[in-house]
Length: 219
Image (tube, rainbow, N blue to C red; front, top):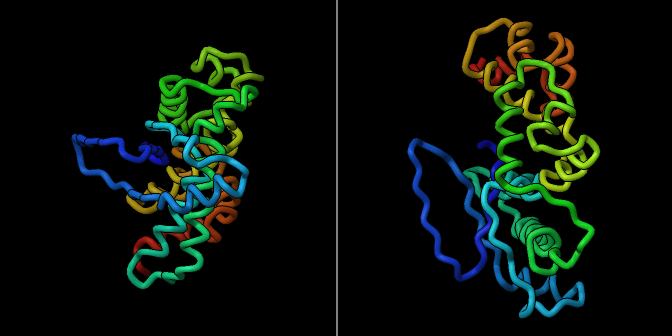
């Protein structure tokens, strides 16, 4: 699913099987970056291990990944200093949220990978209609208050912001791949009306629906 993040610790073998065409960004974090970040925090890097994660959500890692991708693409800025800073930021995130050091934070709330995937899948399947916290919390079999906390802890985003971002992505896909009127695109993506879509699209992309469609069509 779009936005999934997998974390594979050092020296752990892995094999991937895909049933259809897919695209992934693979990032290797230098051990030196992780060691330096751990030592800056007064931790013995030899005693801290990265935790294996599968199909989880972390908006910070996702944003770092997009920034790295922009650096390595043909014609990209390719700034070594910036790439080093991104590597350090990624190592810090892994240490703080996905290592044995983070497990010592007993106050951390969590949601199982299976439940999180169920909730995210439910959101994707029902983007076109109104969604409520009560409805989503029931999918996770949790109370609303607990669900809000663990969702943000697991994805890095509040529920409403995550849903808006997914609706914007759905709208962008429809603008790129269909000739539906903008008003219908808004409805299909779950926005109340065309101006509602336009407001969020401009905030996240800097373009109106018509401008974005023109960009996609090369006009």
